[in-house]
Amino acid sequence: MSSSETTAIPAEVAEAVKADPIELARQRLIVALDVPDSKSSLRLIAELEGTCQWFKVGLELFVAAGPAVLEPIIARGHNVFLDLKLHDIPNTVAGAVRSAAGLGVRMLTVHAGGGPAMLAAAKQALAGVANPPELLAVTVLTSMDSEQLHSVGVDRAPATQVELLARMGLDAAIRGFVCSPQEVAVVRALTGPNGVLVIPGIRPAGAAIGDQKRVAGPAEALRQGASYLVVGRPITQTPNPAEAAKAILEEMAEAL
Ligand code: C5P
Image 1 (tube, protein in one colour):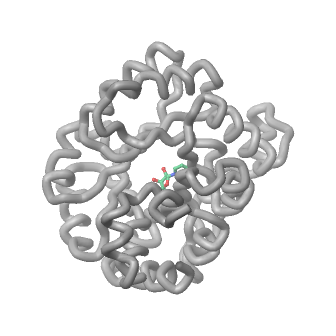
Image 2 (spheres, rainbow, N blue to C red; image 1 turned 90 degrees about the vertical axis):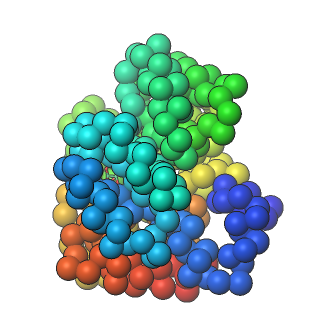
């Protein structure tokens, strides 16, 4: 398997960046734009221009600013991961997936916990769509530990629950998953090299953990088999986001 198949990075891009590990790392780092409005997101993107190429638009920004928030980001040539974590009845999720597929985003999330029928409907909604986003099934949120899982009636360890949900996603022909760095190896073993594993809960040495529970550093997550790393506050909540991102890229580059 080539590295482009492993990470779903187009072959020509993989070829161009092969000689430059920082460029390769840049293709795999996604910055979470967890900000309240479009203006703040554009300010952050301007600060990271030339350093980062992937941005995640999540619920905070999308609910505040709507689909229009995506246009200037895409127009600047950046890749967008739309992290809506859809979770509803199959028909409703399929409709939302179809709507999102027309927005020019490269990745889109649904909650695996919505069940097999919902996952199948989400996948089916993309059949026939030209250049569809990669559909990612979110397994267990990185903010959940055993105690939190227990509170919602799940007595399994997080890794066991992640494995169950990943198998469910694979059965629905989904190859993309979101899980914590601590379960990457388990999910990679299930998906093989074609899996697209997008990993939040990344904390470089010294960064505040905040509300996350199952975390690891950037190099460790890549070594375990991550395709992409999602990093929010350790970049965006620092005095110099570009410097913080560069330090993460360097750590990633060493591990690649
Ligand atoms: O600031 P921090 O690096 O913790 O941000 C992580 C981002 O990844 C957030 O935008 C969060 O919504 C997202 N995420 C997560 N855990 C998941 C899925 C997505 O933390 N399982």
